[in-house]
Figure 1: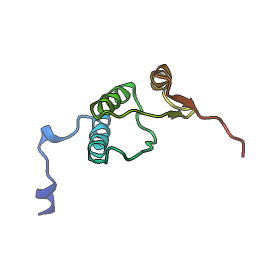
Figure 2 (figure 1 turned 90 degrees about the vertical axis):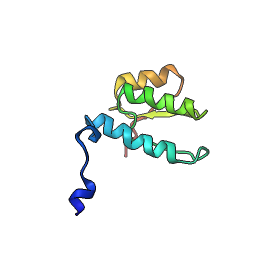
Figure 3 (figure 1 turned 30 degrees about the horizontal axis):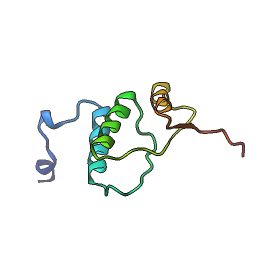
Length: 95
């Protein structure tokens, strides 16, 4: 019975990990309260995800305060947010 409940049609399966990640974040984003702050780690991981996330923010009349970029962050994503004046590169702190 469990197998029947969880079975999906082929068209309902995500085409790749990027789409699955976007679907999960979309569900979270649209379900959250508009005035609730948030911190996302590892998202957006691609320029496409960053552009989609910008569209979601614009649709809700929200904006970002800052984006902290780790040293390993993709250059195109960092450049995207740096162009908007939001990127803050993380500094390496010696322990």
